[in-house]
Image 1 (cartoon, one colour):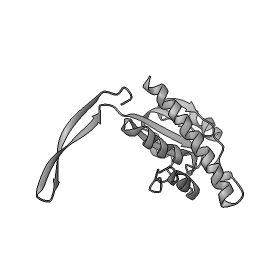
Image 2 (image 1 turned 180 degrees about the horizontal axis):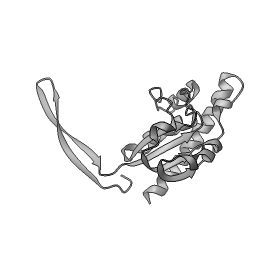
Image 3 (image 1 turned 90 degrees about the vertical axis):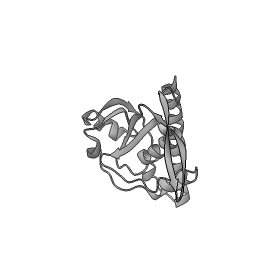
Image 4 (image 1 turned 120 degrees about the horizontal axis):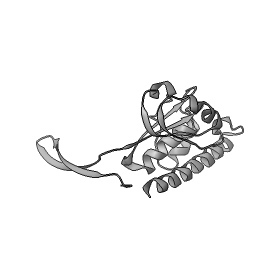
Length: 167
């Protein structure tokens, strides 16, 4: 579990007339991470979904945007292709997280990186820069190729980040 102290508890689970016990493994301290981007529509949404899937239960993951908008349908589609459903995620403003403390605040674009020093939330700042797939032009398939490329680049970066965190 990536170095976090772990303990387990037994909880009763009732299904009609039958009660059984299920073991729940709980982390004593989950690390918190916030992914920031301009619109919180594509890069940060994909990063949030990827981190939840790859980081397992070790991380409390959030994403936000300086100018939140909507979750881009092509981001949802690109993530569905690798078995990650982000269709229930929503675009959120950085204002929602101003008073929260995070272990890491990771910007995913140059615009957010420039605004990040003004973000009062606490946490170690890390800047990753990825092209904006929402700005891609062309046919749906051509634009989807850009979303896939950015998704895969974010996934690779998260995998390297998690390896460095577990050492």
